[in-house]
Length: 155
Image (cartoon, rainbow, N blue to C red; front, side, top):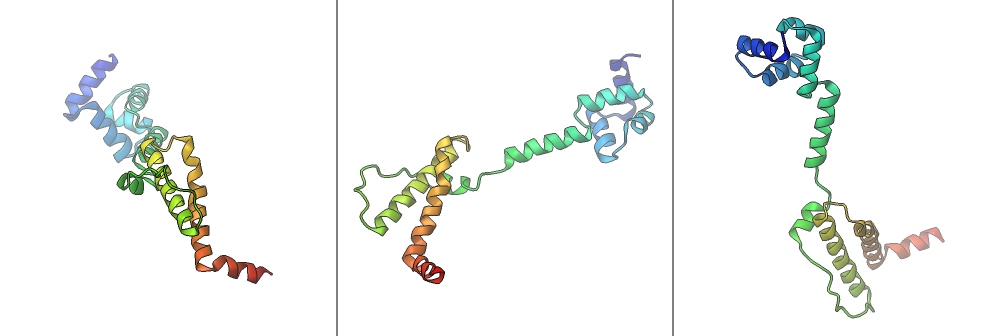
């Protein structure tokens, strides 16, 4: 018999599509090639061919699951960048105070998060984002006096 004839016989016997039958045997029952072929009453090579064709081998299932997880995973900046569609105000005067510097850093963080979100995380410009986030924490620490305390502690 040929592959199509085997397929027709198996589908008529189980009254399901071959893909569902193979999924039930390979994933649900976790049968290997020999036991699966015995259960269907076909040659082992045909079972192995169908298992590969429907991507039901363990490594193929693991690979497909990993790809799906990567597609579904979101960047840590996605939620924030989706909500705010801000770009830095280019006409801002030069920063002379810590508060103005903090505002500029906040605007740049929002801008780079927006770029990261719209580019799907593929833009090289967003490499500066961790730098600006760190700068923001340094500014906050300076305003709270924690940097001076740390300097006194180390001296």
